[in-house]
Structure formats: structure tokens, C-alpha cells
Length: 383
Image: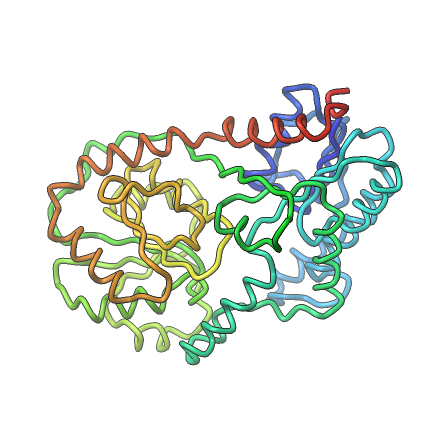
């Protein structure tokens, strides 16, 4: 029986919690809140809620405090959950925790001889900081958008200690796995995709090539490189839409790229609907874990134009499901955008290939990979 812990409920830990429950392997799922978009199909008797700090954090955010300090800060939420879970590891055969919320639980599990599984959602902190520092030097005017973690020495020590205590690290992409210190035991379990969807009957095929960028409007996601590529390209038959949260005044973004259409953040189903009207997803990220938007786009028939650091290198069959370009290379981006614009006749076939690729990356595949790894390392987790 496996104790699963995560501060929030998102697509990947929801899939794992529900798969463990279906297999009769879930001892308990510890999290903060499980209503609305954070709901999870796990019986109440195996849900353990620790809501108060997270509710305080969400309330202060609604009042306009983006990153509240003190008892309602994100670090306080993670540490509080971790301490609570550490007190309740008895009865489990293994524990599975998330980065920054694992140390106390892992220490308690180690004392009981329980195997410890560690989910690392993004590149290890040393790689992340190195890449973002270099990016701040390359694009100093965009440095404030990088949202580079200003982590204390104590927090970085916690991260290092969590990794040391882990018996196995679960990574969402090859990029994340490659960021780990040498010798770290790890596997790659790629996230799942939504079920592929046929194109809408009223889809328009005329007009300019429609590029779609989805994500926080930051250079961590490569937006400055997208804008630079558009300037290099300077073609009227290419249109860029940007869906995301601005981190700067509009004058900043319009100064970088006068010609783009802003799409405000919206419910997930409406994001997918917007994808139905676009041709290509562009995401030249500098550092990610595995950007789920890539697989959502594939499921709607959009080929990808991405970097390996977006975490979806395995999704790219060059010229079939899209193109992979190096990070920090606007000229390469412009070249591949031009390829799409000059090969519009290839897009129908690429849309079909995109949907086929999405179908091979299901949440069942993701959860089976993790559960198999747990069983190999810890046969007693069956009990």
C-alpha cells in the first residue's frame, strides 16, 4: 500500500492517485483541498485533507498578494503538509512525495525502512538556476519575467536532502532526468495526453498560418525568442496568438512585437477550443519539466515547434508531428515557421500524425510506468 502526497491536485497526481485506487494499492492520498478543479476520484476514507494554509494562500492571492510571505506562502503550505504526512506514514509500505514537500515524510519513512519515491516536476534546481541566470544576461530587459526562484540556502539544502533520501526519482521528461546529479536512481514517466479529438467541421483552412503560444508571458517559456523570430521572419502570411498571463505592462510586449493577438487566460475547455482554430503550437522554453500544453495541442491536431527543454522531445517526429529547435535560437525558430508557412499542404497529414502521437501517450501508460517501477523496487507495496 502506497501513501501518496501532493500539495495540490493536478492532472498527473490525480491520474496516479486514481490508478493506485483502482489497483487497490492506495493507502492514502494527502493533499490540501479536493473540490472544484482539484477534485479526485478517490473514496473519502482514503483522502487526507490539510486545507487551512492553502485556503489562506488562495485568499490572499484573491486580495491581490501574488506571493504572500509567512504562514500563507507557498513554501509554508508545502512544509506544513510534509510535516502532517510525516506523522501518518504508519501502515503504508512505501511513500511517494513531491519536490519541496517530501523531507519530513522521507525522514519518517526512512526510520521505518519504507521505500521513498520522489516526483521531480522540473529540472533539478542547479540546472534551472544555471539556465535562468544565463538567460537574464542574454535578455536583460526580460530578466524580471524569468521568475527565477530566489531560494534560500536552507531551501536548496532541503531539496538536496530530499533527493539524497529518495530511492527512486520519477521524472516527466528526458530533460529533467538529464539534469539530475550523476548516479541518481531515476526513471522517466511521460505525462498523458487528453483523448484525440477530430477537427471541427467549420475549421477554416484559408488565411495566414496561425501560430499559438500558450503559457506565462515570460522568457522562461521563450517568448522573447518567439518575438525575435517574428521580427526576423517579417511575413504577412504568419499570425501569432499569445495566450497567457502578462508579467509586464502592455507597452513592454508591444514594443517587443507590435503584431500579435493577445488571448486572455480562460477555462481549460476554452483553451482547447482556441487550439482548434490554430495551426501550430510554438513553445521554445528554456526550462520546463514537461509542458502539458504540448500534448494537449497534439490531441487537437496541432504540430509542435518546441525545444528539447520543453520536455517533449519524444513527441517530435521531424516534419511529421513538428520540429525540434535548439534553445536560444530565434533564427532556427524563424526558419521552421517559414517551413510551415511554405508547406501548408503538409498540415492535414501532420494534424493526423499529431493526434496519433497523442493517442500513444495516455495517462494509463504514465501510471503503469510508475506502478511497475514501484513494484520492481518494492514488492511489499502490493500488500
